[in-house]
Figure 1 (spheres, rainbow, N blue to C red):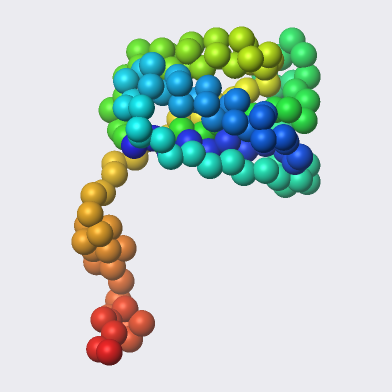
Figure 2: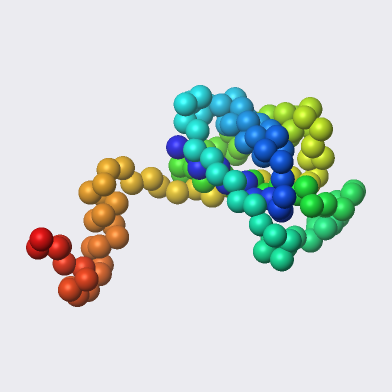
Length: 139
């Protein structure tokens, strides 16, 4: 279950955000993610809250306010081949939509997903001290 987050500077029209999200999802599907596995969010920040270097690392053109940071959180075990396939598909889709792909950064983070409420609850409470706040509510 990939969780996609795009971060952009305010303001961005819906069409801009939808184009990026649709491109990311299409690229994920092309790399083997099921079509219905779609969990996405957009974070729009003021310039003071979203800082980036305009040219790192040696870009041909400086980044603008249309810079997009895409974060993909997905299960451990995706091969480099799968990640490259995803990136190639994503950059092609975005370029075809008129985006300067030098102004798009993609970060991958891998995690082991816990399934079920009990597993998640247990993982949060197993190491907590026995304080009144950590005990079940008797009511």
